[in-house]
Length: 185
Image 1: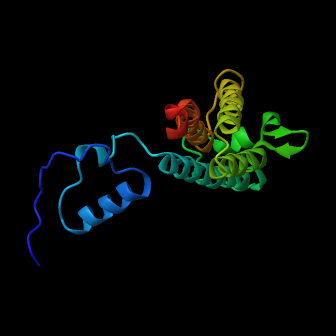
Image 2 (image 1 turned 45 degrees about the vertical axis):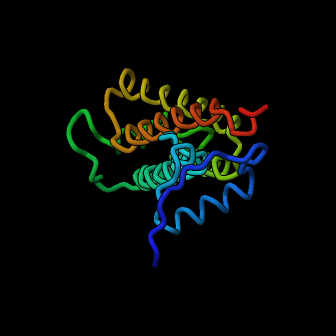
């Protein structure tokens, strides 16, 4: 195969690669082994599809953590997260604060995380940001209950708080990020 190098020529007046012709040019250049021009390289920011996938992946992790907490809620055995006097998931998940209208908070968490994943995959950025802010507020309220009322923490609850903090930061960044169509308008 012949070596293809860069050829610098002055562009013809009125001639510019746009739209599909630019994409075709980039695919030909990338197949030939020639590096992409600086304008075609990624800017270093996270792509919108990557952000959506990352939020959905965090929501899936939240479903798993909430499912583990739900198992503790219905269990009567000694839990593996019964670490010491300050860390005991059994005390937290069997307290009166572990249910809302006879529905376990962990089940609400599973439903909430599934809703967040659905909103992320459906590209509902503003709805997602609003729901993650509400979930963060609820999670902070439950952490307040753990610290000042029960005086004991649940490792699953604290992990869920970390997940929802990360999701809130990402979803707010995603909601505030302008799309290429918005930038050109």
